[in-house]
Image 1 (cartoon, rainbow, N blue to C red):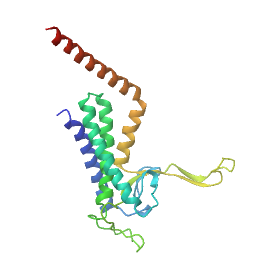
Image 2: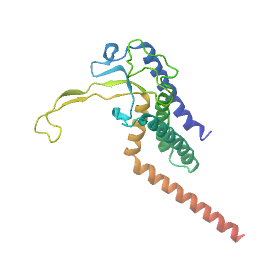
Image 3: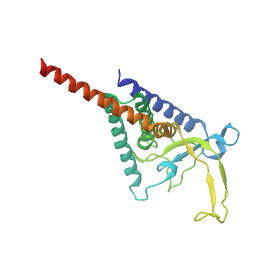
Image 4: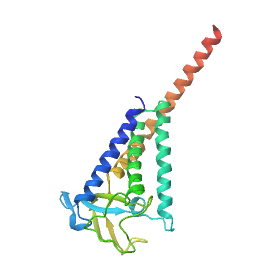
Length: 220
């Protein structure tokens, strides 16, 4: 049970993430035509897909998407084992909860990368071309995003070094899995000193108890 509760949190994140993605895919129009306002015009649901990493960064090689998907799978396995290790070594539970959030988010996006395009039919509002087929082969799926923060867009002043005079869009689009990873990472960064100092103290206490236990056994 001490391990299960952390994996259960990850499973709930996966369930919520995939449920919302499936709903968006089957009930929303692709792109701006199907946007659903949530809070005014700055936060809305917007159906889009991301074929790369965060912020749409792509690997340019022919097999870039395949490499990215396998990297994600390896990362998920590593994080899954890391949760087991943390529980076994009695790290602070708050830290393990954060890693569980990251695990759930990572698995959520891996599911898209592996299966999306194999089991999902194309959305009728999106018309694929021969160069951009809707149905993708195994391990080449694209991640579904839907949370749209329309922060700002416009030209930057000319006096800004390197990027001055360019037209900039500040509108991140993400999903439940991305949010879960972001929240987990942010909490770890904010409380890292407390997490790792606590874990060090726990390890020292455990080693001290073990040492005293050995001394008592020798003495008797």
